[in-house]
Image (cartoon, rainbow, N blue to C red; front, side, top):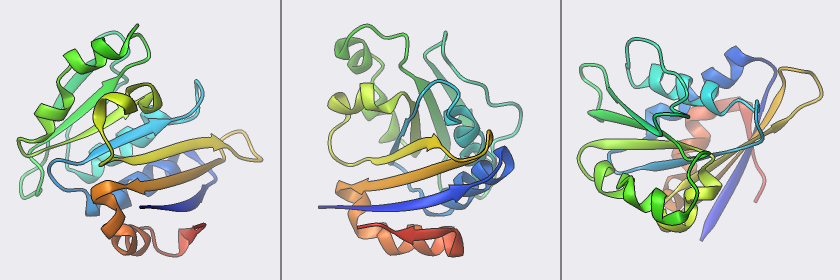
Length: 169
């Protein structure tokens, strides 16, 4: 079973705010797949999520490193943010070799740019976040689709995002 929710964003700051609000409902073991074209705001979303988890310091796209790990702030219910970018991987086997599934089991949450490419290696317990273009240059439509373990958290996600969101199915 799945649910989906559409959220509008009219700026980079608003996209970060949506992700920061979402950080209030993430739990250890969660995987968030970021989907969208080049420049859609995937890294911006990851930065907002990191800020909400208390990560200090800059969060940049791990395009060439493939994966970075960040310690979450004191008092956060998640110890580690795993930020991956699988754009440069050439096969699903390379995604499997990153062992993201195993890493999130240890008090971590994973956010994966180009997540649609990694999805076959990660199972059904994911939140897929698609960033699409809006009417203005910095505007975005952010669609969240909860699957597996995310299914039962649809109300939590909706509440965390507040009036900025509307259920679409």
